[in-house]
Length: 114
Image 1 (tube, rainbow, N blue to C red):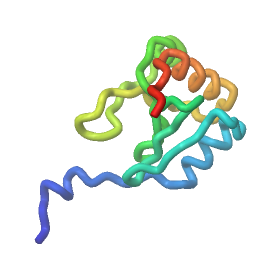
Image 2 (cartoon, rainbow, N blue to C red):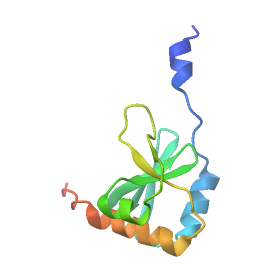
Image 3 (cartoon, helix red, strand yellow):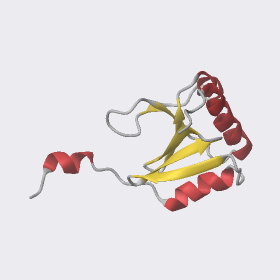
């Protein structure tokens, strides 16, 4: 049966090509990794979740350092009910992008060991 409510919230998934583009801009850093999740990609830096690729947009967590480095970045929600994240619009600046990832990771607490 067709459900209009469900169809309203379905968004386009991110492409692997866009993820590969972002990873290429980061210069193949060993500190960067990703995990596919429900058609999108969660991004890690140094083992910490720093953001992700959602609807072919690069989003990073809203931390003090990210806000300082991206003062004019729009705040967007990757999906309904999620916390706001910063939209990285200038993905083509690899060195700057690496500095943003490192700064966000530095702001985050160390994860718990399993």
